[in-house]
Length: 243
Ligand SMILES: C[S@@+](CC[C@H](N)C(=O)[O-])C[C@H]1O[C@@H](n2cnc3c(N)ncnc32)[C@H](O)[C@@H]1O
Image 1 (cartoon, rainbow, N blue to C red):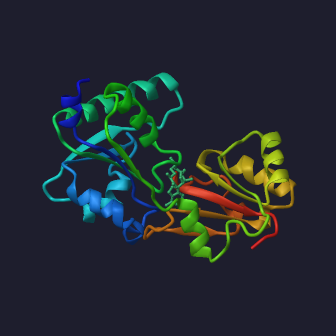
Image 2: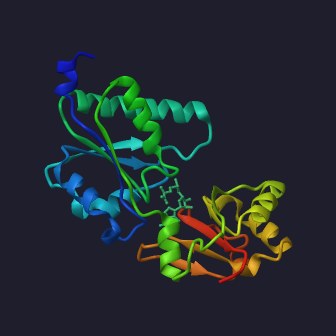
């Protein structure tokens, strides 16, 4: 890529839009969303509306072009890779035409987000492209703030993990860390609650879904949710010393 081409190339932004309440979007995120030419929104096949778009829509310029990138809710590495490549190529096309593009993502941009995969691919397609990643308030920071509970104090160790259903691994994590945030719990909830019960931690945990959205739900009664269909946007916060 020649220096001239790079100089004419747009900038790629990754914007964490925060946990759901639009007032928790950062000032930098709002500035960027106001000025970019293209806003790229993640969309899973299952969703009718992009969650990130709902949070950010008030900040996006009316003139901005909206482009969707499919983020399939599958584990198959090949399918994911192909979809990210397709998305990155679409983004690169806009950048090469001189447009500034922002990819919006829920919570923080650098935590379990399609953004980091796309960003790496965009950089492979356009080496040297300007990239700015804008952090956002994570879902678990918002959860702790809502509860007025510390995530960690003093020498406490905090683990942030995607849900695991291997009881042995879970036991190890709970043995090592005072406080644990379990994300993506919806599909593995019952198995996780079984381990919490076995370790005597079931009453030291809280389930929260759609934090920051009007439909936010909070429950300390973990048994009551067994066998129910849980929201993808849900997490468990466990504190060894309780709440
Ligand atoms: C792909 S990860 C995205 C994490 C996000 N980047 C963040 O900083 O929180 C999706 C998981 O984040 C958690 N999550 C994101 N937003 C949430 C919310 N508003 N309420 C509860 N959990 C949320 C859930 O555990 C969900 O399964």
